[in-house]
Image 1 (tube, rainbow, N blue to C red):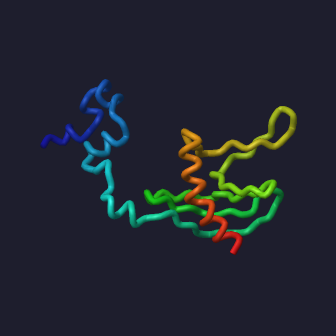
Image 2 (image 1 turned 180 degrees about the vertical axis):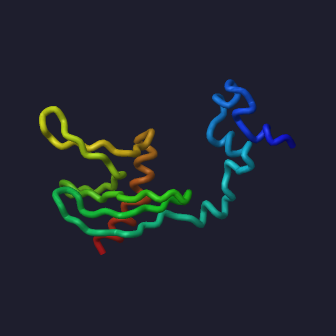
Length: 130
């Protein structure tokens, strides 16, 4: 096999721009699908949980996703008897002088966010509120 077939730049700009991330990984020799057994045996993992109790912020934690991605600075919030987890965010001040927050990551759909909350919220509650 020629080494240029593994290099998207060698396929021409048109071909490389049409490839998805999964396509590029497959051409680089990586599989786009993990073995089912490995995915089923993995779960979310919470580390460095710390209770804070400041306004609506209950605590912070680091989250290791089933994929192996680690997100530092996840947050557990509570307001009006409801709890939820959020990704880390950047604080900024609006034109009116009020603090605003912009998350570094967000979900593409409400359904995806709901599945994430269902999986992670009980773990965060257990780690921070135990």
